[in-house]
Image (tube, rainbow over all chains, first blue to last red):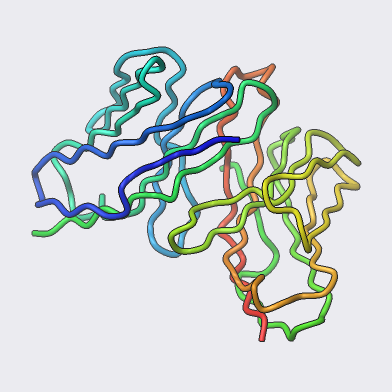
Length: 110
Length: 116
């Protein structure tokens, strides 16, 4: 089985930086995903890490350390529209299914 | 634009009723999934399918069944709905991982089911 932990909620100010941590314990590993989900909407794909290191995509970056079972999603220059839930998910070594953490709700304040 | 379409956005059913949740994707994806999403618990996998007529249990299959008669359609069935099945149900699809190396899921907008 897999265990994926991330904080429940975070608050940050517009223009600031927020880092959302995700730790996982899995018997196998084939990649880690971050999704964004606005209230009442479908989750949408943000990033994918399978090798150690930092992946940067505009204002969003995602980091992975496989030896530590750790990832973070970094959101820079926060905007009000970034208020959403951010879901960490791990792919098992075999098969295509994803296992999700509980999600982190980020509230951006003016 | 690629799409995963769930037939009903909101449903209200009574305990003991049979419930069908339909999901259709237009991306020719091999894999399809049904998750439920509950506050504090995140997304939990109910069933998934790698191909037509194939199905595999996820982490919480009890009380559910699925049907995949055509590649584009994946149905979730609640044989006898119970109040603890009140939830948001999300369908998703993806290409085969062998083809893409990363199984990025595309989700539908969700079906919010209330069982009274």
